[in-house]
Image (cartoon, rainbow, N blue to C red; front, side, top):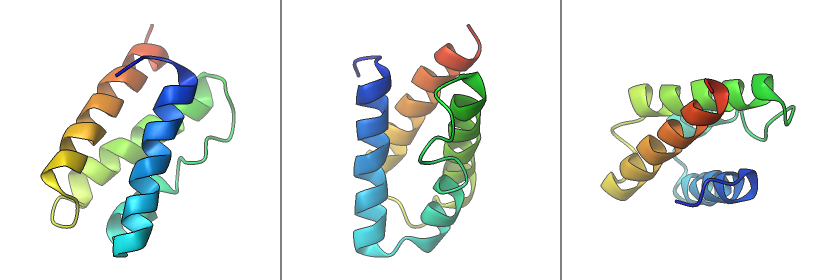
Length: 84
């Protein structure tokens, strides 16, 4: 995954759209706590990171294996941004 703000946000947007289409309410409940990001600064990215970690923890039953991989990749990329 290309590590740019735009590409990360596009990837999250694609996940949110898929979860809306399939009515993955648990995943949506958690991701919407941090997306869309409230600030382009570290605090906004940290909130998105927390939201993705909660999706990973609590929405395992309703997201696909591919989405789980994408969530893990996004967590890794955003962690680099937040903790640099």
